[in-house]
Length: 164
Image 1: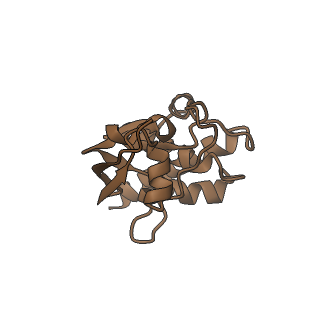
Image 2: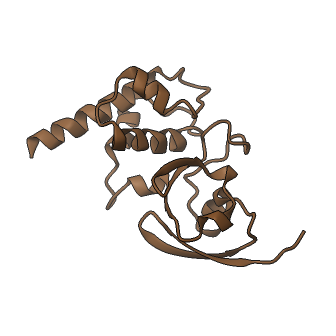
Image 3: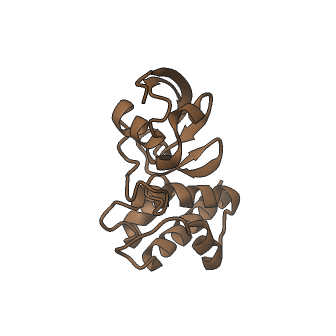
């Protein structure tokens, strides 16, 4: 196997990034090891659990399955990108308030997946939340507190929009 490095340029959380990496190095590893964005977690390493979910060019992807060479010129959003100017995203706040975060392994992926869902469906039903988070596994909460967190965040977002 070749250890040849490639220069890969992309945008992550609104910032330009350039890394030198072997072409098959996983996006997950580049985010964590090369860019210091350790919020994205590895759960299974096989694309089955969703802990490493990020948005790439607007699509929800498992970063453990994406070779960095495919990221060239892309726009990537991680869980760190949800916080703006030190302010927690309504989803992050709702996960704290509703107990949606337990051990923390699935939480980043859940937050990114929920953010993706709310960007397309601002006021989802429980069935839509269940479908939107279907690729993300939690072994701690039984999902009810996670669903409640998403509903709470959607309600707060809606009340903030109506207040303006």
